[in-house]
Length: 248
Ligand SMILES: Nc1nc2c(ncn2[C@@H]2O[C@H](COP(=O)(O)OP(=O)(O)OP(=O)(O)O)[C@@H](O)[C@H]2O)c(=O)[nH]1
Ligand SMILES: [Mg+2]
Image (cartoon, rainbow, N blue to C red; front, side):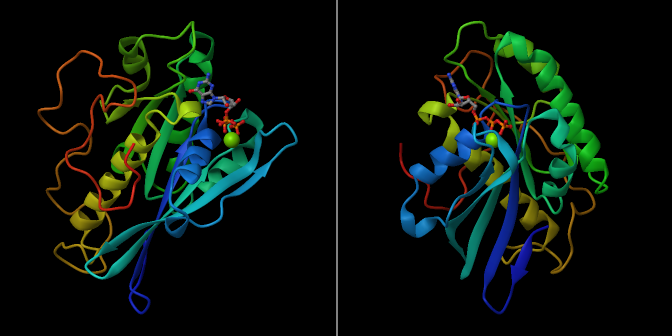
């Protein structure tokens, strides 16, 4: 849950990277860490096995500048993708403000992607949340590998609601910041809508979309078909969040 510290004039938001084992969640955070100025990031904490599989989570705090005098901090987390760490995944989702589903584009991982997405939906219900009620984007990762599915196939299986989606080669940093910016922007929009942010909104202290709030998802008038270069938004939200993302 977004935490606003009025005394310290800080807004803290939690973003969780979810997806099957080895899809590239930790790689996303590592790339963000490597490419962000040291004054805008905190320490990256990784609890991993000897073979670099995430054991519990990765954590990276990022400072994305100020809005009306409030420092905005994003706390980025990854979950462990291996099936048997479900209790950890559930725990890490607690208080989530925004979610990135990192899909592995390889044909061989189609079942793992579907299971992980289903698992995300199930675990969110533990907190009374539905995926289409929270800021949510998808990253189609590993676009550099042979034996990958087409975007159309991936979309029809994993993105029926047409949320913003991004092509990526996370190991090269491609698409990583585009994905982060998109989810950060959706989180800001949600805060604004809910009136819990000093950014604006009707009633301070209220959380959740207000009555009559528009449905989440792809903004109208997104780009028509055709694939942009990797990392380009396929269906991105308009504008960009405030922040200090590096120019790439
Ligand atoms: N070829 C290629 N390899 C990638 C890409 N992204 C990540 N990898 C590699 O995939 C492997 C797994 O990446 P991780 O980031 O550790 O995967 P994870 O999703 O955190 O895995 P778990 O922690 O087990 O859930 C690593 O060897 C990465 O270097 C990509 O876009 N292309
Ligand atoms: Mg990991």
